Every structure is written in C-alpha cells, then in structure tokens.
Amino acid sequence: MKIDSIHNSDGGSPLDLDGSTSQLARRPRRRWITAALRWVIMLVVVFGVGRRIWLEKEKISFYGLDLAWGWLLVSAACYLAGLAACAVFWWLAMRDRGRGPGWSRTLASYYAGHLGKYVPGKMLAVVIRATMVGRSGVGIATGAITCVHEALLTMATGSLVAVASLLMVSIPHHKYWLLASAVLAAGFGLLALPPIVTRLGRLAVRPFPNAVVDDKHSCRWRTFGAGTAMITGGWLLMGLSLAAVMEAMHKLIGLISQWGFWKAYGLMTGLVALASVGGFVSLTPGGLGTREWILVETLGPVVGTGPSVVAVVLLRIVWIVAEVFASGLFWIIDRQWNQGKVHPS
Image (cartoon, rainbow, N blue to C red; front, side, top):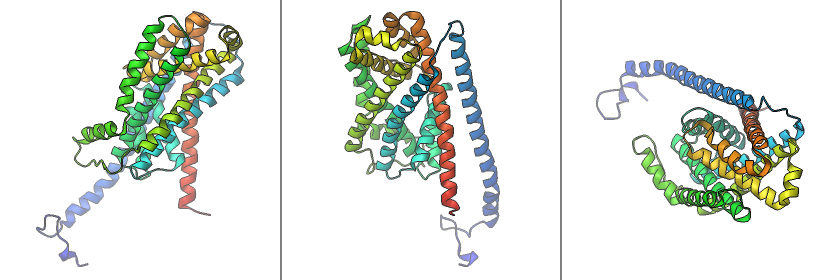
C-alpha cells in the first residue's frame, strides 16, 4: 500500500506520519507507567499484609501456646481448597462471557486478589484480578464484573450456610444472628442473580465509553447453580479450617464431646461464614476487627473468651500466610506455563 493512500479515520488529509512517530514514542513511556503502577500496588499490598500479620501476632503474644503445627498446615490447605471452589465459579463466569483464561492464571489472579483486601479500599482486589486476567485477553470490564459476581455469590452462599447452621445449633443472641444472616442472604442472593449482575454491570461501565459489556454473553443459570453448589462446598472446607485450628490448640476434642461431631462442625462452619460475610460488609480492610469480633462473640461462650481470641487470631494468620503462598506458587506456575508455550522444547 502506498503511503499517500493512507488517510485518517475521518476521511480527511493523509495520515500524519509525525503524529504516528510520536505515538510510537509514547508507547515505552506508557509501559514504564504501567510497570510502575504494578510495583506500587504490589508494595502497598506487601505492606498491608505484613502489617496485618504483625498486629495479629501481637494480640496473642501474651498467651502461652502449645500448638500442634501440623494442624495449622491442614487448616491452610482446607482454606485454599475452599477458595479454589470460588475461583472455579469465577472462571466459569468469565467463560460464559466469551473468554476463559488458563487455570494457572485464574488461580494466581484469584489468590492475589485476596491480598488486596488488606489495603484500604474494597476495590483493589477487583483491580488486581481484572488486571491479571486481562493479560490473557479477558476484557477489564468482563474481569471486573465476573469478579464482583463471584464475591456476591460467595457472600450469599455464606449467609445461607450461616442460616442453616444457626437453625441447627443455639448460641447467645441466637435470634439476632439468625435474623442478620437471613437478611444478608436475601440481599446478596438477589444481587447475585445473573440478570441483576448484568444490569449492574451495564450501569457500572456507563461512565467508560470504551468498556463493552456484551449482553449476549452473561452468566448462565446453569453456571449460577453449579457455582452455588461449589461455593457452598468451599464454605464447608473453611469450617474444617477453623476445626483444624481448634485441634492445633488441643480444643477440638472437648468441643466435640460437648456438642457432638455434627453440631460442633456445623457451628464452626456457620460462624466462619457469618464472620466472613460480616467482615465483607464492613468498611475495614479485610474485615479487620469485624470478623474477629463476630467470631469471639459467638465462639467465646462455647470455648471461652481466651481460647476464642487465640483461635481467631491464629485463623487470620494462617489464612493470610496461605494466601501469600498460593499467590506466589500459582504466579510461578503460570509464568513457567506461559514461557513453555512461547518457547516450546
């Protein structure tokens, strides 16, 4: 094609080659700015996570602990497996909208997003996840909307798990916690319905003219149902995570002998779900203070205030360390996988 036949998009004068050169010159600058922003986000997240671990450690420094450390590893494994169920729904929701990244990228993005919740501002987790999957060709709008959908469905199922647990066991202020769980389940359940999420997505991207939300590719009801079942299973695994922490403190056997296995397990699962949902609706980073307060208030009358405080803080530390480990592990796996595709042996 001849150069003089190239015209601007408005059909006017020939294309300004000097303008094109200046645009090419700006591209490296944009790359540097993008890289700098990524480093800033990473450093902020590292600071937030490190600060959170230090503060939690200080809370239990006065207690003499005789821990079975192996059970803390079991707790971390149960927690990560529970989160993986939520990540699967996120991947399915992105696939329904026309683009599903690889599993290693999905898991790396999902776990890394959890680290963003320890920084003030609830949206940093969404930014991290949408940006990371965006490198796999997923649109920023699609990544963000499906991320929010996963969070809403996770909170809805968590509230339902809390309701089911509180119908099975009785704790102090039982009616209050049951009513709060039911209200949260109804609210999050409504917002998590696929048509509502699609409408909210259109409203959210309206200020951004370049963002496109394709209504033809939204979350299917089949995916919604499968996600509800999988995430419910994830909450059951998170209940096992708390149970493993209690066993690490040598408190689980006494709790089971007092309540029976199923009631004790249902209690721990329901309280973890209730506290997590309560922390989500609070404005503090990572539900700081809110989640711990709910767990101490509900678990304290059962195992004692001192042991409940230790269990809650240990659970928080185990979960943070597990998130850091999983984020790094799947980031390395994803990096190696993509390098293998670019440079096949």
